[in-house]
Image 1: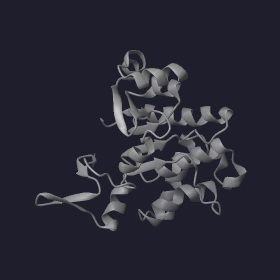
Image 2: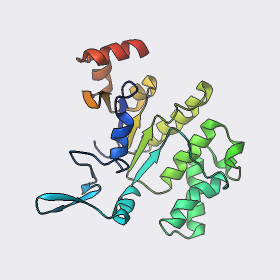
Image 3: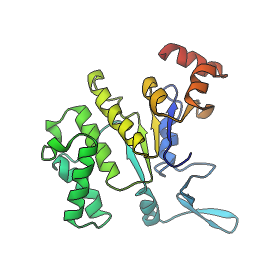
Length: 227
């Protein structure tokens, strides 16, 4: 995919969407193929004709460039919203606390959570916690953001606020790969739609090509039930 694109991955439960996403930051080790981010091979290096896995320290360095937002929010419950967003830039990137705080405040403004900077996670709704999780991932200045069904754990009335945050990121040019069942979001934001089934990509094209002209019977059946 190109820098600044949003690609949506869809498909039934068990299709392999999450496993594929986790291969893109080496949380899962692919059994074949290779992942390149901005021209750099992820997780391995060439030694002669062989690929050798990188040391954990190098893999951790590469992961800094890949932000990931999970279905569950995984916020640090003993830290305020502001502290959650500041923690990794200070502890991992080595930013001084003044820089990290300024960056965190900017990101909380971006995701519409500046007014909750000093709240604790248990004081927030699910949608608010997910927006803080997005800000926390962005704080590492990743080259690409991965979203694994970020609205699936939310009550229906809270979904729209998270999707609006993601639309805003897309408009700002963030490169995003989104596993989602939110068809309206995919149609509005994505440059490409990928459909997976049984661990394989069975359709890949523009959103309208996949939604209106899918050639795979499994894809047509799935879309017929959700559109």
